[in-house]
Structures are given as C-alpha cells and as structure tokens.
Image 1 (spheres, each protein chain N blue to C red):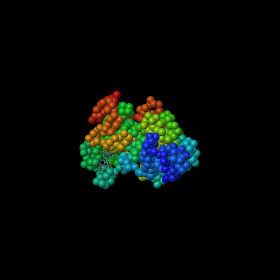
Image 2 (cartoon, protein in one colour; image 1 turned 90 degrees about the vertical axis):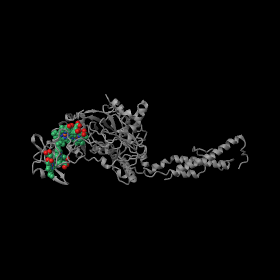
Image 3 (cartoon, helix red, strand yellow; image 1 turned 90 degrees about the horizontal axis):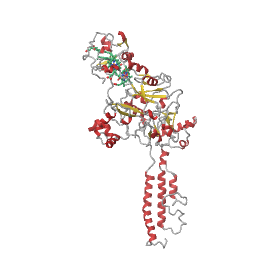
Image 4 (tube, chains in turn purple, red; image 1 turned 60 degrees about the vertical axis):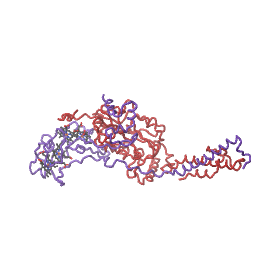
Length: 248
Length: 350
C-alpha cells in the first residue's frame, strides 16, 4: 500500500485508466488464451471421410462384356444351350430381318449390317462367317469384324484402337489386349451414353436446380457467371457464346 | 501431449528478467524487490504476463498436432532424396510404414521403386473416343490415396465446344445427366510430365524433380508447400493439401511407393506421377485400365513396337499449349472416322 497514490491528480488519471483497461484486458486475454490452450485439444486421428459418391463398381477396370467362348451357347428360358442343340436339327434361318420368334432378346442395331447371317454361319451356328465362305470360331471374332472394319481393325492390331490391360511391357508381365466384343456388343455396337461421375468440387457452388437442368454447368460455374456479368450478356446466352467462339 | 513449456512458465509469476516479449510486462522485474508496487499493479502485471505467455503457448499449440500426426525428429533430419543411401531410405520407409500402421492399423507394402533402364514414358489420349465419363478421375483417386474429404482429383476432364482447342472455353464442372454431349468433346488433363518442366524450375528447395524415365516426382517429406509449382504449371496439374488428407480405412491402397501414393501430410503439393508404383513394374496406370473406351495409351516411347510409338507414327498428334515450350510427354490425338459411318442410309455422317 502506497500513500501517494492520489487518483485525482491529472498525471495519475491516465495511469488509472491504464489500470482499468489492463484489468479488463488482462483477464480477457487470459481467458482467450486458456480457451486456446485447453479448448483446442490436440487433434485426434483425422476422422474418416464421408463416403464418396463413387462406388467400386463405377471404377471397375473389368471389360464391359464377357466374350463368347467356344463352343458358343446361349441362355434359352434360363437354360444354357449350345447353338447346334437346336440349329443342327433343321435350317431355322429366314434371314429377312423380320422380328424373330426365338432370340427375341437380340436387338440388332448395327446400321446397314442388318442381317443375322452376315455374321452367323448358316450351316454351322456355332461358327461365325469367315472370308470366302470360310468359318471362324468365336475365339477369332476380330477376324469377323475385320471383314467390314478394316481400318479400325488395323488400328486395333497396332494398339491404337481398343485397350490393353495388364502390362505395357510384355517382358515384365502379360499384356491383355481386349477383343472387339469385350467393348462392343456385336448386335448394337455403339456406346450408350452414360452418367458422368462427379467432377471437381472447386468453384462448385450450390446444389443443382432441377428447373435448369440443361444449363446446370453454366449455373454452377462461377467463372461463366462472372463472364456474363462482365460482358453484360444474359446468362441464357452462354450456350450461344460457345458456338460463336468455336465456329472457326 | 502437453508441452512442459506451458506449465513451467505459468507457475512463474511474471516472466522474470528474460525479455520474452510478451504483452503487459510493464515492470518486468522480480516482484519482491520492486518498491512502489501496488497490489493492483502486481495483479495487472501478473495477469498480463500470464495472458501473454498463455497466448504464446497457444500460438505454439499447433506443434502438438505434429507430434500427434506422424511428425518425427527422424523425418525432420532426413536427407534429400537424392542424397539418401539405401539404409537411409530403409529407415524412412520403416518410419512411413509405422506411421501408416499407427493411423490406419493396416500394414502397407511400401517401397522406393527406381526408374527402369532404357524406358521413357509417354502418354497419348484419343480425343475422338473419350466420352467424358470421369471414370479415370476416380480410379486415380482410389489408386493414389488422394484425400476423399475434401476430394482431391489429379485428372481434370474439360468439356470443350466442338471446333476449338482453346481450353479457356472449356467447362471443368460439367454435370449432365448423360455424356457424351453431341456438341462437345472431352479433354482430360493431368500432369504432362514435361521434358522442360516449369514446376521443377521454380521449386526453391528441389522437392520436385524429373527422373530418368521422364516422370516428375515430388518428395512429400521435402516439400515446404510454397505452391510456386502450382502457379508455374500451365496445365493445372498440381494440387495442394490444404487440410490433412482423409482416406477411409477400407479405401486405403496398400501398394505404395515413396515417390508416389504413400499418404501425404497437410501442406504439401502432389500430382499425377503416371502411377509410378505400377508403371515402373511394367503395369498400366490406373486411369488407362479403367477407361471404358480405350482412349488412353501408355508405354515406353523408346520401344519401337510400343502402342504410344504407333500413335505418334500413325495419328494426328498435338500437345497442349505447345507455345509455352514445356515439351509435354502427354499427347492428344484424333482418329480418322471409319468410312463405313458415312454410308448409312439415315445419313449418319453429318
């Protein structure tokens, strides 16, 4: 206790104010610091991520289709039967392109190639059509396609069409070049459109509005929205902007 | 784990004469020997000093996280990758193995796989076939132990309006019910493993460099996270770990290598490395294997019979942003259309 501390003198008023500030700020700081130290406990092992929307089946590298093995067979009324179980009995062929009674599950959508017997041998149904009336086992299916798709077949032979799984270097392991029918359904060879997997979430804003499904990406991409504001074009014109930009 | 530092200082009223620079130490003298010290000013000083110290301790408290998540003195003292001897590397691998085991309770198969002799990797991508399904993006995430939350993606598929190759016009965030869209084509972009890589040049600590097989790698133990490389890359190929990557335990890929897909810490850069833990053992990269269309080609460009050599020889090939002089090892190409498509009765060839 010091007697000379007289709060009324002007010099000491500043000091008193200091003290008031300090006595408020000190504890506040202390509390804040305590909160930081005690409150922010060391992080536990990082919690597991939320389950991603991508399922294992979406990124399975297995071929799209299983290829037919010799001797060829098919499921008829749930029972697996060889082609010649029936076709050896009689010539069941019409080859007119009209709807069939049997094999109604086969939807032929191969453009101009619209006759079954362009590919399936008439006499021996367990074989495919080869050059000059020859016959091909299903194991050589690419020779069938090659008869009509020469350039693509050549690409495939060189490895620039289709896909090789496994090893890029045969010295280190077995390369597995997929055949045509592991990617293409021979009856409807074009690829079906599919749903894309989720894109990057950078710059992605808000959830999609079903009303504007056709413009989803424009709606969500702030860069494009920003562009519209900047150039004063209405958002619905952004589609047109593309075509103008890409016209040359 | 408590830092002893905190408690020691806190029990010490005031900070003595050691100028610790904390706020509120107006009279940093031993209390007892100070004449004219009021009770109030003593309290004030003490409170201020304690507060200051505690704030200092708080500012240091992130260090405690490091001790929790795999920070070790050994890692701190580790040599640069290129200076490590085999036994140094084995020690580092042991440490990483232990860290992964501690965190995921799984034992990884981790090695340091060196480039193969006489191999220079090249990638080629067929723009006529790609349908933009983004399977490659997610196969890559799964293969390379990328963070799932937030999800990090090395590959960016860009939806491009037909008739231009100006990627500034592309859309990175397209989200259609189905792809491909008739009026667009799709251009996946990932690290081009440039032969003249700007990212390597700007790295101030040589944490990223080019290996003999052409792959540009990152040592996650050496990277300081300055993100210069990210800015230098003209292909948006580099990614930064803003938070500690989080991977569900059952999604962890245990086939790991030091320079590729081992789990990364927070604050380092990463990017595509052509799946080097697979490709240096002769296997195909994950993005190639998952591609349903076969648009992706990979191989050794020094081997005259490789698929990539065929692409370079027979296709119309280009590289992205050729004018910036990066000499990418990643090529894009187009196919000739099959002439049969033009003889359709419906007139499909438009």
